[in-house]
Image 1: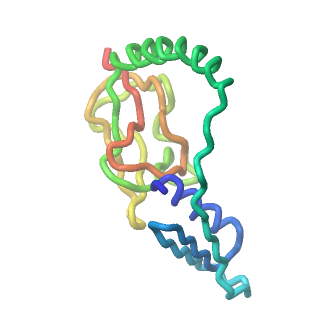
Image 2: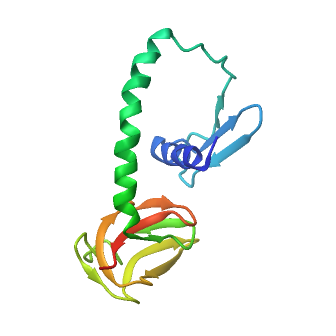
Length: 162
């Protein structure tokens, strides 16, 4: 189980209204407690059983041929992205495009930015950290959705330095 699966489990538990969920597998145990007191003090237990891997059917050869064409498309897209500078997250936290819910976003695709301009805010442990640009250029792509978790060194923006 990776960090993204754990984060989605936490979001699911928070939305479900359960006060406590315990997940136990062969190699990990996770207990998630929410702050909500919904009257249901009984924990919810989730047990996962190891599943035997199933053999792939012989029909899988046709999709493999179709996928052979897509790496060239992926390589072309990567070559296009290589000319851009990637701005990455310096910390783990929650990515926000606005300084507060009632304010406009810091930047949009197509905006020109300079060194020191605030691009976004990342909340980590209830602290809001302004993420400033270290380069000048034009925002080509925003790679993260608003209010989503980000990891250290995760790409956030693509900037065209020209």
